[in-house]
Image (cartoon, rainbow, N blue to C red; front, top):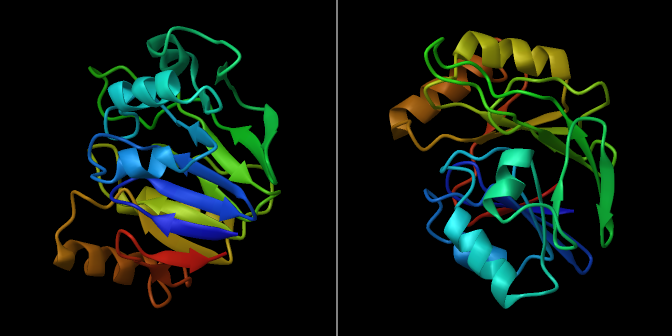
Length: 214
């Protein structure tokens, strides 16, 4: 499987002839191109930086073969569940082409007591090859080889991020959700959390547009 890093929380996964896009939000400049090449779009929750509603709705209208998976709020924004749009919750599983997916977690990480926490799901691919948690530090009860680790945002805390990595026990960590960090912030975060820091696992920082083998 290949992973392409897009800006912020968005990644593409490719295996054989199957291509998935996770969390194409409004902060991802090439989201439309990524979606245009995908067989399915997976959304962890409805926040704008993970879900460009207009973009995904237009893609569905223009491509009857496209499938979208997301929380109830996501599917409601797209007109409700249908043959093309499916609501998923923790414990669900499905397959798109050659890639299997299981769904984990329930809620977005808290930002503040005055700000509601929406539903948030994480996606585990091919039995543990890679895990995208969305905006939550939820550890699935399954082995994870590659963890996509969010590192910036109003809900993130580096101590909780370190505990998340320790709980998941991945072989590999790739930084995502980093757009609010400067270059210095990204390096400092990787140092604190990485191989010589709190987790003992290097934090990889692929640039947007780059592809890595999983």
